[in-house]
Image 1: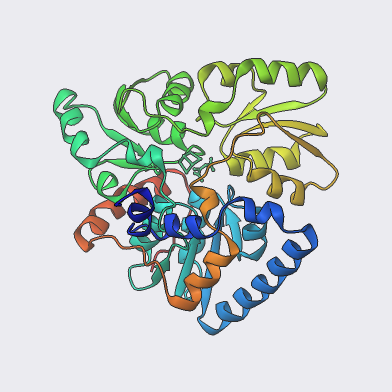
Image 2: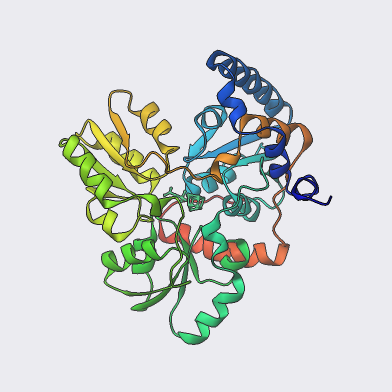
Length: 348
Ligand code: CIZ
Ligand code: SF4
C-alpha cells in the first residue's frame, strides 16, 4: 500500500525525516542528567569542529538556550549581520536562525560558506511576501517608496528601496522623502511605525503577520499585570495593536535587552518569542522575566539543535545560497538601512 509512511520516508526535507526517526517525546523520556551530559558532549564536539573549520557560530535571540550557549554571538538579525562581516578570519558561518537571516549573511559575505543547521528553518512571515507581488503594489502606488522588513527573502529585498528591522523601522521610514510608504510584510509593525511617524503606511500583503507574535493576548497580559503590579510589560512591535496598547515598552529584542539592563524595574512581562528569556536572564541574573504567553515558541527557530549544528559542521550542510544577481540587488537596500540606522557595516 502506498500510504503516508512511504510519502514521509520519500520526503526531500531532511528535518521531516529526522523528526520521524526521533519523535519529540524522546527528549522527554530521557532523564535530565542524560540530556545535560549529551548536550555537554555535543557542545564540546561542536567547539572542536568549529576551531578546525575556522567557523563562526551565530545564534538569533530566539534560539534554544543550549544553542545560544554554544554560539560566538547571540543577537538580533541586524546584530548578527554586523557580526558576520566583523570576523575576517572566519571561513564558515553557521547561522542558527531562519532562512532570511542566513541569506543576509550570504549577501554580505559572498566568499564565505554560510551553513543553516536545519533546512526547514524558514520564516513563514517572510514567505508571505513573494517577490512577484511587489511589482503589483508598486504599480498601484507608483510614487511610494518600498520599505521591507529584513524578515523577507532575498528576492523580495532585491525589489525594495530600503530595508529595516523592528529596531530601526521608524527611523528608516522617517528618513524617506514621502508621506506614503509601501511597507511589508508585517502589518502590525506597519501599524506601529505609522503611529510613530504619522506617515501613511500601505501594508503589503494586507495582513502579513508573525504566527508567534499574534499569539499574545491583551487579556492575558492584563491578568499578569494584576498579579505583578510592579512589573514592566515589554512587547515586540510584531504583536497586535491591542497588545502594544498595554505595553510599557515596545521594541525589538535587542532594544528589550538594553531596556531590561537600564530600567529600575526588577520584574518584566515579556511579549516576544520565548528564546529571548534565556538571554535576558543570563544578562540580568537579579531580575525576573515572566513570559506573557508560555506557548510563544517559534517552531522554525527551534529546529536548530546542537545535534544539527554538529552535523552542519561535520558534513558541511546545508549551504545557504543566493543567486549572484539577486544578492547584488538585495545588498543595496540593506546598506542603505545600515547608513540610516547609523550602524557601521564594514562589509568586505
Ligand atoms: O530582527 C530580528 O532579529 C527579529 C526577527 C526580531 C527582533 O526584534 O529582534
Ligand atoms: Fe518568522 Fe515570527 Fe518565527 Fe521570527 S518568530 S522567524 S518572524 S515566524
